[in-house]
Length: 465
Picture (cartoon, one colour):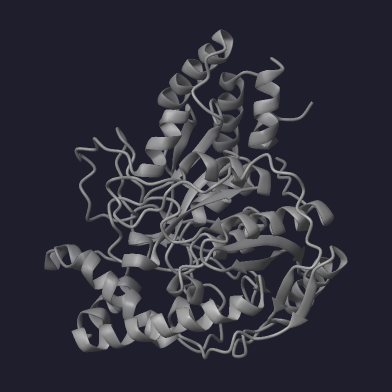
């Protein structure tokens, strides 16, 4: 018999409708999986089993009465610990935040999940204030990759990705300011999309400004579609949030890729890529040709924007900690403390210069998408490396931006960018394919990922004890 913790959200909902499974049984299975695997993986920083079961019991009663609240009623979901969750502290991986709160408000995406009747499994780990591309922090320690516990799951949504991959809740909410849902998705063999900026409302506003997105993290494209439909749409607290998309993401017919114009860029013209990763991603690009698309190799035509991204990111980090005392700053992650000191030294002119270059990058990509509907790249140039490190051995810089060249450019341009599992290294570590669309082309990105998933179903992790 299949463990309910291994079912997708779509499968759980089908089982609820058929009265083969109840939300309480699903919640109990997820909590049992967390009890089994999380002591090793450390994906959760907050668990409240009684609240989880209380939400599940309320959902089961609604299903019994035929009065469900929404499309996700009864489905377990984890929440990254940078998103406000009423009744639970949001500590952001830091010892500098008072757990006492008060915690009286949900962020927009969390509020919508609550309104839909989703069951909250707990809050997942993040590096301190979500500042880097791996997941460890002074408050809860190191989070590990379910495929190999000696490796990082990536970050900053590393706990969310590890939870999904290990069956500790089929759905997760993450955030992405420079790759933070796509990095861990690639490292853990899961699916994600960083939607167009504003597609999922975000509140409180991120100190990292308009780089920061909220995104779904799941094992399948269909599950991500359900989650997107639940959390998209304007929220009065987010002045940059977009109206609901013109049509639901879930339930659409299989997309015909015939004639779609797709560019495949193996390295964006400047990145160094591990040969195993390069071969797997090139093979994945060929699948789109088999599906009828017109695929050609082409680079977008921009140089590495890392220096400008770092000005924006490091200045944002300095803003995060500006209110802290000297004693509190001394307790920060040392790497975070370093970039905050660097970010505080930038002038307004330097920040505006980086912003102007960001706008130029947006212009370049806008024109690029006049020629190509989609862009395919590796999500990551490498596979997951050892835990406890910000960078792998031999990295050209001590910062996480040195090994994430494919992700942060598309935070700067605010485009939708998904990561789809596309293979494994010889060591059995997952590899991700990034699918990038023009701004507001979220539906096309999701449809292309759905078509790829159907053509090349990927192997999910099976952990046994």
